[in-house]
Length: 77
Image (tube, rainbow, N blue to C red):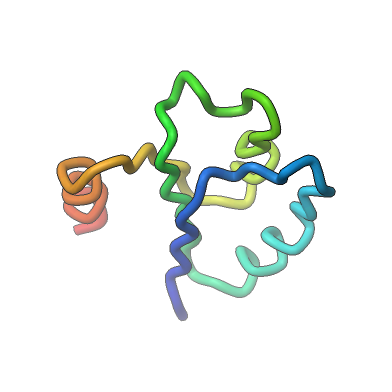
């Protein structure tokens, strides 16, 4: 089974978020992680709907730089 990495800010540009689609992907994958470049303080602000996507994810991780990316990868090991 596969691991899915979603890279993005979870902003919808005020369109329907379609969390059902992400949930379907999550059900088919062994793991689903969302790597979000925004600081944790900005999550779910404005048109960010990461909180609606989070239930389908194994983890939502702030990933703004190489240090954070490395920490995420090491946490998988």
